[in-house]
Length: 483
Image 1 (cartoon, one colour):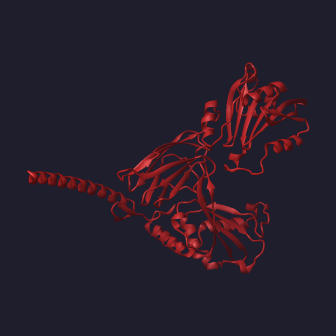
Image 2: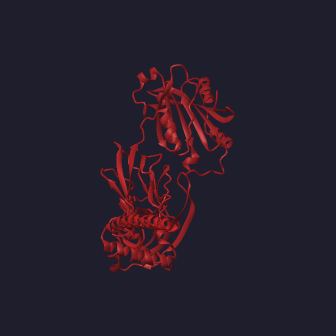
Image 3: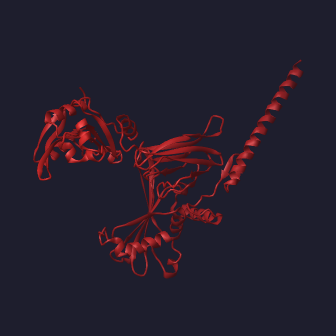
């Protein structure tokens, strides 16, 4: 009986092993096909090594040359080049006011100049062109104002392996939510027959500070399968959440392709394709203004993962709910008054910066007098006619979510009070404030309106403008912070 049972169990175990091996073999075969389809090399079980792809040069020879340069850079500067390859690279150039030979890192010959990257020679020409410069240069420690452009990895890697740059790194917190990252700057003083130039190549942070970061994570599930977290995203170009951070948490390189079927342009330094090393990131951002929404598709090989990005234009005239929803993404939380004079209602919220929103309140008479509920609401005539605007400023966000240790709301109020000849200090709900009378002329007639500024902790300022009576403006202000 025991023998038969052992035989049955053995058969079951054997079948399970065969099924598992067959399934894994099939999965490995598909994985290998995806790997080789992207010019990769299978180096082990579910392991694929890809050659770093240049921004604008798909040829294998160019990719091999870049990898060769990267290997030299790694040895020369004692740095892991995986830290560099997916970053936006800015090249800046400054012309020296005088030649000081001992600081030169390399003297360029006329023959050598023919082989310099076009991005560098263009900057050299522009920096010497008076019509381009506009005669507005300032002397910065022996160098004139800098000129800059974003360059491909091929240009940067060629220069770094050829010349002896000085490397500096800066580690800090970037973007929102705040992320630890390191920027790398390489500096070299080049010299030709006529001039010296300070050349700097900066491998910038992955985490743009212009808006909230949105993360797409490539990782593994409990079964060890590659999965995608964040496969259907919505971004608002021009503000709020306009930067995607692709995070490769897998143990192998992946090649991300972004399919752009529209004429929409992302950042000038963005590539549509990037090989992201294991456990590294690549950021892809948008700043262009849109007329219509656009959709982009992205894929990641060799794992054959895909997702969709919808890029929207933020509303030109935001409702209160939109102000709350969108500004909260960057850590801004404007308040709305619970009291308004009879007949007034919220009209429009204008996005100026992620740290500033302009909100206007109208009545029926104002709607008859003014036609444009966006631009007219910023005019002095609108205020003088009884229009109400409430501006919210957040300097903590303006300063890249960094505290100003010198900020004091009481001192700020005193300083601003001294700058207004027709002002007085008061408190609104216990907070320091300034109420000032503003005068202007319209068709030869003097008009005026009141301006109330309220200073809060956290480097926040509210500014209310209206031609309404002071008592009404104070009542509106008090209602911002409680009944």
